Each structure stands twice: as C-alpha cells, then as structure tokens.
Length: 326
Image (cartoon, rainbow, N blue to C red; front, side):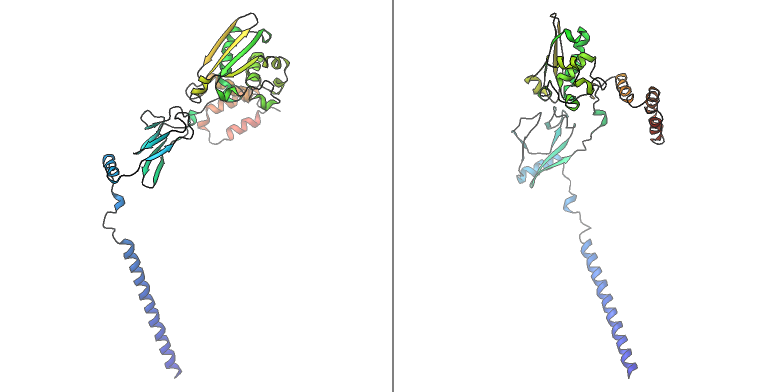
C-alpha cells in the first residue's frame, strides 16, 4: 500500500514540473514576440528631414520661436531679447547667427540653439580650450595691469630717467585695471595688485620681474616715494572695448619738462601677440635660477627641449635633485 502511494506522489510532482516548464517557455515566447513586434517596419524616429523640409514643417504646425534674454555679455546689449525661429549657431565665427566677437570665452562655433515645442535646446558644438590660446606673463604681478607696464617700459626706455627725475607718471586704462590703484599696498601679496607699486618698481629697479617685485620692494624708500607720483584713471572708451582689448596709455613727465606718451591696445603675451622665444627662455632662467644652480638651469633647459624623447619624467626630477640649490 505504501509503495502505491509513493508512485502516485512521484507522478504528480513530474506532472507539475512539466506544467511549470510549459508555462515558463510560453512566457518567454510572449516576451520575445512583444519586444520584436514591428521591427520589420521603419520607426517614426528614423525619418530625417532636410533644412527646407524642417522649416516647412515648422511653419505648417506653427511651432513657436525661442526668445532669449541677454543677462550679461561683452558683445550683446544687456536686457535685449533675441528671437530664434530656426536652429542658430552662436560663436565668434563670422558666419554665426548670433556673433560673440568680443567674448573671449566663446569659440568660433560655440553652441547651437534650436527651438522645439517643449522649449529651446542648446547643443554644445565641441568647443575646446587649447593650450596654445593661453598667455604668458613677463611681469610678476596681476595680468590686467600688464598693458600699462608695457607702455611704461617703452617710455622709460626712451627717456632713460633716474627715479628722482620723474615728476609724475599718468596712466589711463580700462576699468578692471584702473581699480588696482592702491599706492600703499600693505604687504607683498597686495603689491601684486597695485599698479602704482609695479610702475614705481619698474622705474626704480629697471623691470617688474620676479626678482624686482620682491618683499623688499614694498618697503623700498625710493619705490614708496615714486608710488605717490603715479596716477591711475579709468578711460571709459577703453572700458568699452574690454575684455576684447585691454588698452592702456602712459605718460611720463620729468622735472625738466621732457615727457613722452606710449599707448597700446593690448599687452603682448597672448596667442595674438606672443612673446619671442628668447623672452620666454629668459623668464624661465630667472625663475629656475632661484632654486637651481646655473649649471642645473642650463641642463634642465636642454632636457626640456628634448622632452618628447623622454621615457618618463625621471629625466627632469633627477636633474632637479642633483642640481638644486642648498
């Protein structure tokens, strides 16, 4: 009797297993059929329209234009509204629909604005920052005051005055640089943002490089006296063209009446007006010489010239350790 019951139980379990497998495979078939349904037909999203067809479709369905509000811009009028009714490229390129010629942070073809039913879409057009579009500094101070220093250097080279022969130095420049006019910087860091201090240092020490604009310059009596004979004013016309240009005008007047004025639209050192290679190498040697021996400076410079052939950066670090100043 027990044997018969066991056989009936095994047969029942076998039937249940078979039924479960049938249901499972049936479910899988339904899922696959549902997922592949309609794959032999072209989906609506695969239709590609040309520019003319897209414009006609937009006109037919009355798709709204996008309205852009200019919040701040060096090129466009602040508060202005720009209507975009078709895909429009924004950038500095001459063929851009919305030109940003004076915006140094925009690339040639920076972005594309496309009005859609659910709002305006902005597509990045692969704008890239290039290291070759960077700039170098020969003066050891804040970049906005470099144009004035470059003009002053030319004026001093022409007059060749002693510091005590200078009656006053008058500087006109754009707003962002003109605010850096503190004639009594309290410390070394503040002196980097003082145009009167940098100008006086250049006149007294002959340049405004790393070695000249040091801690001692802040308390140098000759520099301190000349700083108060430097006037800095904003020229509204110069502010109008910034930051596309960074103009400055410098007049040096001597006690004997001689005077000279030099002006520039922008200082050298960026990708538009790069420094000559010898100037950059001189700046490297000045800075490297603060931590390396003269021989070390020469060897490191030679090694950098061959950096493309390095297997690793150990070439540079080994030279720096070997020839560092004690």
